[in-house]
Image 1: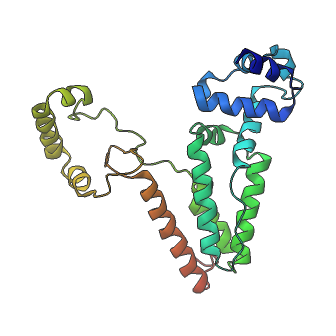
Image 2: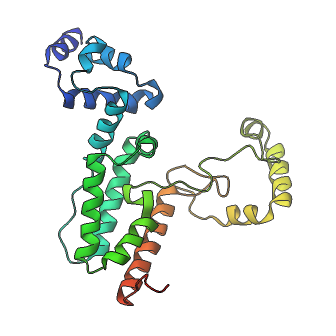
Image 3: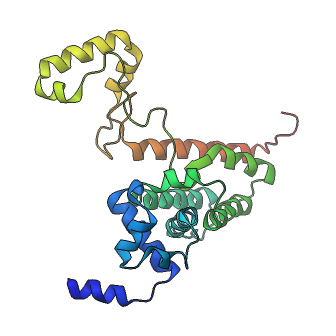
Length: 245
């Protein structure tokens, strides 16, 4: 292992290697752990050596976004624009799920990075090649929003500490207390309780929300994506235009 580390240190430093190491560090330790000093330690160089390849941390983050987005599958060939778009977006989702920090960094950028612009331009091209007007495509891009890149902000990303919500640790230790807390919550928030109880797809990503902790996040993403694509297709066939709306 020591010999491998020494060999890695002798590999010439370049921008690609810097970005690859930064992405790996964020994957392993979280984006909060990323700093120029920590990255330099990972690469076995002094921090000043990094500045030959990235001017500052903001440029480093831009480069990391481009490295991740560059891993999204290229568009498939085919006349069915819905299938092409769906495959591409789900590929983007797979990529971003491998890099959990990436969505937050993408949202933090003051503007789209070059790879993001290329991706968006390509997606617009798919809609236009499918026959959608420039007008409809404009609104399609707005409707999809961050979903184009495979992520979306749910109403509640994680269950908040709502009044009456059961404490996980206490509930796990005392099932009777959990049942009582859930009954109390159902009395106060009956519609949330009804919807959570009705959720049948409890197997999946394990990422729930305050509204329905058992929800399969991937299922919900694809469900909404398919609804949107079907709606776009219907509007396209109707010759929809925003003029005079």
